[in-house]
Image (cartoon, rainbow, N blue to C red; front, side):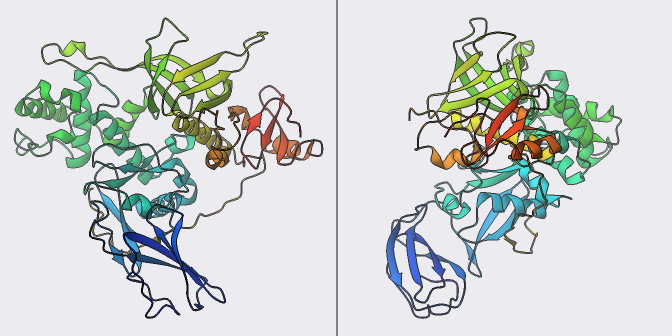
Length: 498
């Protein structure tokens, strides 16, 4: 093990350990050095070390093994690991992190690096993602995961992290912060260019013209002609449409649209066009359903600030029939305020239960076959918690105070920042680590968003006859009482018993 940080008491210490390892040293009368395999919490060796003089010194150690450890080189500077995080415009931010730095730490730091006006709050609407193959953006990483073991696990040299918007809340969409607007813009462009949001032919040229206006300003016939975009045309034409025309035909069409454009706010116009779609901001999941014969068996399930959307996927254009292209269609919409509870079986399904209709004795239940049940449940929980935050409340109904999350260190150099189970598991944040425990149901309806004064009063009332951790909260719409567990994050309409 090569110790790359100078820690008092460790001078001259050496050991032979195969593979890449992480070490943490804690100050004790006789400190101990735990050597762990990358990505594992189980120590493979524990060695006594003479007492050090630091409360906690996280040391990055790399043992060069003949077998290697993936295709991504781990680089260290001044005892800290270099992590590069990409934005969707291919720009990059460079961070220096500790071995124990978490995903949420990186998100908070990225909010500072990008320059958000209110990074402590704004970062809560963002997420960090792996792109293991250099192309496909995977689901959001859990906030408590450590980033260094994740980076270690990559086998592809093109693998990277991507920072993007996760929760399209009302406050984020209403933000006047130019950095937030830019993040919404580049994510809108990504969703159009990648084909996630299908568009029609006429919209292709119009949206590309807005991109050109934003990047190059007004149309210049002397330079804006075929050949100008030869190397970057893929950045302007949605992937499903790219091969429908030749590059020259596309350039001609784009420059005509650009020359006819008259706007001083192309970025805002682009976001306004895309955000006009009902499914804007949705995280989409492929699912199968059997409860409604009128609906296709295979659907897209979207989760956004409005709740759950069921969508029919769009169809790509055909070279000999561009009119065959269709956009996504919303088949059903279920507001978060009407959803009674949701839950999932790992790798099997996801379901949500609606509030009873009129005097119906049974609540409508919608079940979907999917291996991504946990991701869907987590997204709904995150939106429910975001709605509470927007009302200035904590999950237990108390007022939210302004706390700044700790940030990891930046390298101070932005030179690289240029453009570019079968058990039902509780779908609450604190319950994520308890998936192997007793089965439980998830419930985090919008009714958790109580007004401040009633919520505080409810938190105090009825606490004495409830099991530990549970409080009463009044639903501001109906006046009904529901129950929330501040320890587990579980909520329920029925009064819990000990």
